Image 1: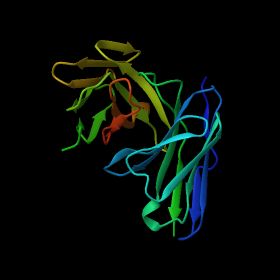
Image 2: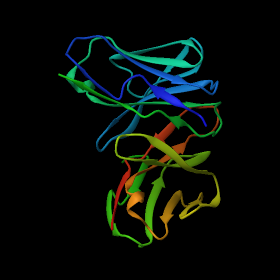
Image 3: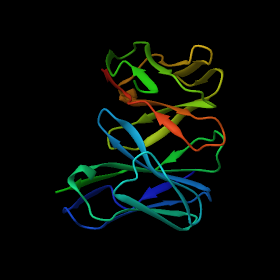
Image 4: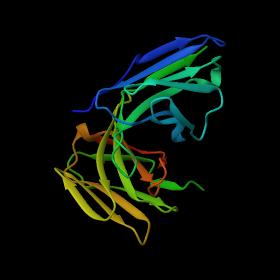
Length: 113
Length: 110
């Protein structure tokens, strides 16, 4: 079974803090994704990585950056957390583009105070 | 208007009922994905389809490419089917992009 893990299920941070969300997949997938999920809006893509050290902005990259130094690990960084970044963050991976299914992690619920 | 629309947004059913959740989209796609999200957040893949119909246990998914519409059916519904069901379309190959619907929250009462 494919396993995608995220470093925390719940996280509480203060405004202005730097926040790291880690995602690890164990199936040697090339593609990894970070989404945020907000009520009434569905999942929105923040950043996408198609290979090590390669990244592309998604629909809502402002206020976020990412790092992919190793194939199995994709990190989302909130440089200076703000209250409007309170959300559920979901990581996903898939083996290659072209229609293969995405495998999701359990999600991190982030609260920024 | 969203590119992927789901209906209904919320649905309450009695155990044993036949349930239908609809997904309409307005963009070209290579495939459509039905996902299930349980309370607590984890998302699992139910079906990926690009034509026709797929069945897995009590779940059936259909897609009509000409009408840009897909349905997810649950037969003999059970309280453990209570979850949010999300439709996502996959843009044609050459891009990475998934577009997600906002989900249908299903509650099945015993």
